[in-house]
Amino acid sequence: LASSQFLLGITAIPKCFGNTLGEACSKYGRCVAPDTCVCDPGFFGNDCSEYYCFGVANKNITTPPCSGNGICSMKDVCICNSGWDGPQ
Image (cartoon, rainbow, N blue to C red; front, side, top):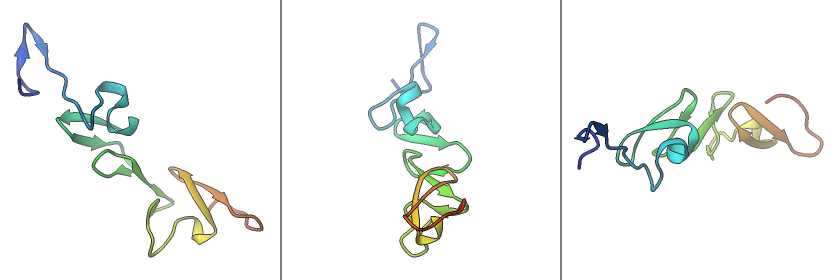
């Protein structure tokens, strides 16, 4: 059945990347069709697993997040390398 069809009055729940409901879309979006996520604000990617850290994509190689002196552990949260400090 397609995700928009009804079965005995219950809508079929689509799977996104092998998961349904709360586990789908990396918990940062909603699964609207098979393997199709609509991401929450600030999150992106096929499965909503990518996010922005102060406006820079967490996996950006050209312009690394956290001014290149730390890692972005979650949306807008930098963990600074030793000897560095600050929010970004």
